[in-house]
Amino acid sequence: MEKPRVLYISQEITPYLPENHMSTIARNLPQGIQERGREIRTFMPRYGLINERRHQLHEVIRLSGMNLIIDDIDHPLIIKVASIQQARMQVYFIDNEEYFKRKSLYHDPEGQIHADNDERMIFFCRGVLETVKKLGWSPDVIHCHGWLTGLVPLYLKTLYKDDPIFANSKVVYSTYENDMKGNLDKNLSKKILFDDISPEAVEAIKKPTFNNVNILAMQHADAIIKGQKSYSPELEKAFEAFEKPILEWDQEDDYMDAYADFYDSIVDVESSIFAD
Image (cartoon, rainbow, N blue to C red; front, side, top):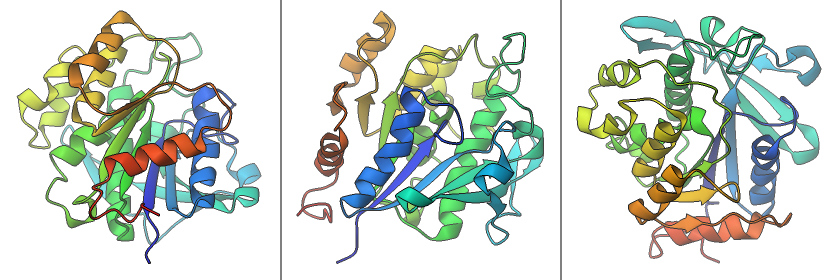
C-alpha cells in the first residue's frame, strides 16, 4: 500500500537556523512522522545566513530554472537540498538572489522590517508549490509552520484548487509567536491579485499585520494547530470564529502521536490511506 504523504513547509528549521520553538518542531516532527510510516518532504527558505558549506547544500538543477512573476517582474527560482543524516531526511531550500541573499531573516541590523518581506512570502509560498508540482509528488497533508507560509492555504484554495497534484490535499496551519516587528507592505493584497485571486479572498490582509496574515491562513486552511499556550485576543477570537478542527497547544515533549492522529482526523476517512 502506498505510504501517506505529508508536505512540511516551515519558515525556520534547525540546525540550519538557531533553535527556537518553531524551528525545533519543524526539525523533529517530520522525522517522527516519517518514522511512523509516512513519506515526507520538507521545505524552507535559503536565507543568506545559512552556511551552505557546513550544511552541504547543493543546487538541484532539474528543479531550478523556473521564473515566478511578482508584481509584473520575473524572479528566478533556485532549488537547493541538504540532508540531515541522523534523521535520514532531506530538506529542500527555496532560493533567490534578490530575496534571500541578505544575512538576516526578517529585519535589518537596526531591527527594521525588510520592506520586501511581503514579496519574499509570495515567492517562498509559490516556489514551494511549483516545486512540488515539478516533483510530481501529491501530498495528502500539507503542514505550514509560521507566518511566512501564510499564503499557502490561500493559494491551495484558489490558484491550485483544480491542480491534480493538490486535488486531495488537506492543509494544516500552525500558529506561533509574533516575530514580525512591524507590518508587511500595504500593497500585499494588490500584488496577490495579479494572480487572479478575488479581492474577497484576501480581505483579511487589507492591513497586512502579523495577526491578519495568520487570520488569512486560518481562514483558508482545513485545520489549525496552536503552537503556543496563549495568543492575542484578536487571534483567540479568530480560532473560535472559524469553527475548524483545532489541535490545542501541548507542552509534552512526545507530541508526534497527537499530530499524527490529527492528520488522520482531517483526511477523508473513506479514502484515507492514513488509517491503520
